[in-house]
Image (cartoon, rainbow, N blue to C red; front, side, top):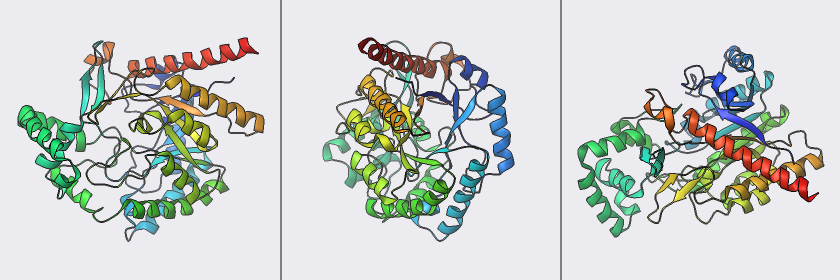
Length: 399
């Protein structure tokens, strides 16, 4: 049973983790993007060639593009939607010309992956990313004062939020605000409070049904371009996979994934299977989702979250947390084997370990992208590699 392709996220030449260290981790593929162009303009082919050359000079392959940002005008069906979709198509064509075939993207309104704490202490001394549901409610209702926010929470949660605001105080809430809205690695936009409220207002009145319609319109425009060039598009799920700030979420469940695939039925229209994002919802049976949707999974983010009773969660060890990671990996390897037997050229699924703990010597470093330190992800990749090798050894012994 062949392993998945082991990849690492890299944020370009300014990433504190150099390509040489990624190669030492045993990865063969790089997941990156043209991070300097995040405003919806088409990506210049000469810059893409330069970036690809840098990666290949380090002995690695640019395996997955993550991500070509989807402009707000596309998500809101704004008056400039056609122009930004045209530019997105131009970027896909430029990527195809230099040999890139797998493109991960997301359709999350305003915020990308969202956490309230970037250095949550774990029992072993490592530091994890965490989403505290009470801290989030306290910020949303009592600090941000989003119009209508209180209607999204139960009376009990509002009472908890009041108590949490008193506990955290102004400094604590300022840290939470910075984490929530000031921007994470390669974020398209960075906000102050007024700017964030204005960004939320752009989505006022847009329902989940309407947002799905905007995504379907977008897919019907870009999937034919991807088909023409033999490309695979793979949408990343919402992170976390439930509504935030009153914004609609449309990539959170198996039903959502089915609907997206049906919106533009094509091998080019596929999924990024992020176990951490889908894993924030207890009703998502991840191994079952892989078995059902596996033919459409073009990329995997493998990480684990530990769900907490109050709706909070934190990033767990890759083989810990609430998701049975070995069962997910087994389902993905079985899907690969099925594709290979079918004769598919794209039988191998690229994976990357995601959101590793901050640990060991990385804790004291001044420049660290939260969730993307070297050692925590290296540990995660090693654990995932061990699972894959173990499954293969068991299958060989049983043959």
